Image (cartoon, rainbow, N blue to C red; front, side):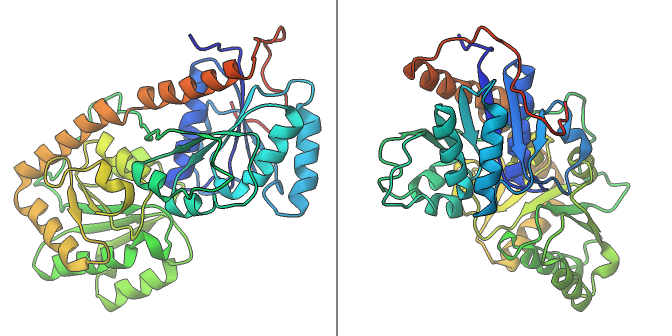
Length: 379
């Protein structure tokens, strides 16, 4: 049985509208609901729906992720934690492994790491071991295979823990209602590797074939200006709506009929899992961890990356055979319920935490109060 008196310090970079940040907040909320004593440290929050912060003991600590100044901030953070130190530190971004290792060494506790992307996996190449890094937890087998063999990773437990998401508590409106034009959507940071340009070209082709659709992109980022210009060139601006990442994710998913994830590379796709949980049919690029989730034409559809023509054809298939599309949506939701649910993810994460703390000679603290940090906290 896990010991809920365990103190768990969670560390991440900027929390913003992207799947990795939603995963961090989901873990923080889930551990709090299970009555673990947690604190989440992040430098900033932007474009996050306020309700996602409820139930999270969030402490904003600007500067801790900055390479040089961050050493001073981490030292200050260590002093603030000395009276009630964590029993384990869990890091969500390998870019800040040095900060996590430094803090774990100062507080004499194990460090664990979730690796959410292939880019983060590639950073785990070093000639120097991370002595406090006791477990590396990639989000998919694809990401796991991208982790290099190096002295840094040699002595760490390795275990794939797939993200898990919550299913809706209330019934959700059916998709592809004949009384309104279908809505095709994608969500996430507007960056080149998310493939939004291919999404817009596909939607433009769908419209030229005579389908009356609405197109919604939720998110913001450096590519927004280019995407707006592309939409104007494709003559689909009147059918396109941009909404920022602060919008309710549930509200966005309820409003769309088909969710597209045209990423050029992907660790697994937390936003895709959220869409499937809401019984929204998914069309996704067959990259990275996506292929460990979706069986093509069973619980979603797979297209080659960078192929707007293939994406257009799959959207048209879903619009034309609506009964088959609804069945794919229900199969996707069933898959989330069975394999990618929040309960399973938290059980596996807690199992790792418990095993490491027991191995290190952990004893439940006499003082069972929560981790104490000054500064703002959202609970």
